[in-house]
Every structure is written in structure tokens, then in C-alpha cells.
Length: 295
Image 1 (cartoon, rainbow, N blue to C red):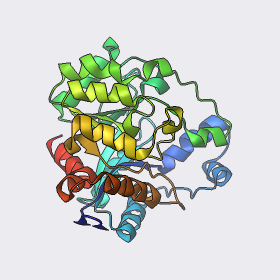
Image 2: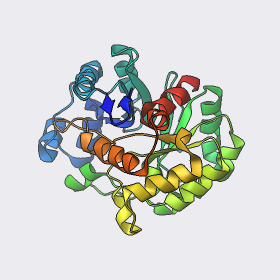
Image 3: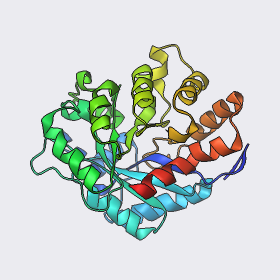
């Protein structure tokens, strides 16, 4: 992709893969059919074959000049969808999947690049003994661990009138401190700059060199702290450097597709900060490729 720093191989660290199983999960909770759910939120219903959705995403990324992307299976038990996507488009995608460590027989599917944990959603502390087996499995499989902290809202649930009984007591990045120290070879990925816990996320990352921050979404949490994106990037780069920042968009559904506006806002913030070409290439794709090649 052409950028102010020249040609950059952009890799998006945060794209939700809303498979047919995702729609069916919402349908079962709302008492509707999957097509009715899609119509209610004005989204395109995912095809039954996840490989077809993967090819749609690949074509969408081609239009924007994006080299690769993480695809996140966004309901527990949907690992097969992202695995099929990776297989359908060799070398194009990385497979992440939501896992609830409190679920019976919770495990990380072979081949996943990262297990996604949502402590506030499933109501547990990262230091809970019940999470330990999953962390040990991630370490054994050289799998990264994505941990959503801070403000957690799921817009599609709100549109469908579904409750979201999340518990923010479990959303502080500081909860990862002892965990990240116990597993120093495991990359821990914190999306959205900590989603409202920027200070705590930076404290954690400053103490734990295996913690990385993902820049995805509009980062609307900034309004709670009178911050702008340029300031957020400056504080992050000053604390952890360009080597532990992962560009992401939080793109998710069609017909919207890939959210280029997020890229443009982040590019402008980093241009304003005077970031150099080498650091820009790391942030916009190099770091992700390096981390996941080791995972």
C-alpha cells in the first residue's frame, strides 16, 4: 500500500470474522432466524461456507492494498471457521478465536495464532486458577493470547435488544501483570490501547516486554479522558517504542467491509508525530508478522 512513508506491506491485526455460525448464535439468543438477524442489523448474511467469506474478505483487502489480516472468530467454538478461512487463502490470514476458559473442556484449537479472552464478558479474572490451563496450553502451542480489557460493548447485541451482562471489574490490564511474567515467551495482545485503561496498559507493557498494544477501532473511549489519537500514539510510542504497536481497524461486517477511515486517522496521527519510515513499517504490519511467525 502506498503511504506517506512509501510502499508499506500493511497487515491488519484486528478483523472480526462474522461467520454463519456467528449469526446463528445471535439468532438462537434472540428467537429469530439468522437471515432475520442480518436484516435487523442491515448486514449481509455470511455464506454457509466460511471459505467463501474468506475469499470475500481477500477481495476486499485487495481493493485497499492490504497484504494480510487477522480474522477473529467472534463466538466461542467457532475455531473451524477461521481455520477454513486460512486454508482457503494461503498466506493471507491469521486465525484468532474467542475462547471461554470457564467453559467445560475449554481448549485452544491446533493451528490458532491467538486465543482471544474476554474476561469482562465471561466474568473471570486473568489470575483465576481456572485460566491457568489455557495459558499453559497457549505457551506449549506457541500461541499468542489476546486479552480484551477496558470498555466492552457489542453493538449488534444492543441493536437486537439482547442483554450484555459484562463485568468491568475484570477488565483492568493490571490483572495481566503476574500472568505475563509467568509466561514470558507468550505474546499478550491488548486491543484498542486498553480501551480506556491506557495508563494501566502502558504500565503493564513497560514492565512486561511480551505485552503488545493493538491500535484498532475508532477508540471512542478517548472521550472519557480528554485524549486525542495523536496523544495516545505519542504516549504509547514513548513508553514501549514502535516495536510493540500493532495496527488494526476492528473491521467486521459487510456491506461496510474494511474500515479505511481508521487507517487514515492513524496514518495522519503518526505523520503529525513525525514517525520515520522504518517505524511505520513495523507498526503497520512488520510487528504482527514477526510476532505471529514465532507463535
